[in-house]
Image 1 (cartoon, rainbow, N blue to C red):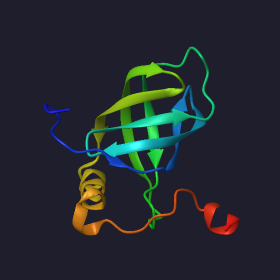
Image 2: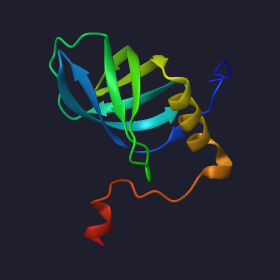
Image 3: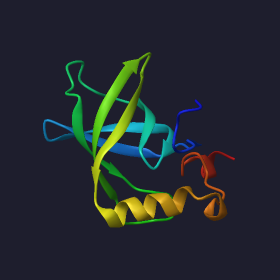
Length: 115
């Protein structure tokens, strides 16, 4: 999309979105410093449009905490814009997404054991 400020990085990371205080598991399709596209693995049908997200980047232990706003939802996927994030978390995400810091990341940790 020509009006996009940031390029999306295709990557599959599991994360939790918190709806009504309960974690629901999701998986990213792609990620940028300003949002993500995801597939939900479980979610209530009447889920609210804004929610907290706990995202752990590959090779890191400390989660990023983000307040997200769902933009659209269709066919088991949704797009989310990041509404609020701590400055230190934003810096970590931007550093992770830089092409120079790109490194091999298995799609899912369990993929290492299926070979």
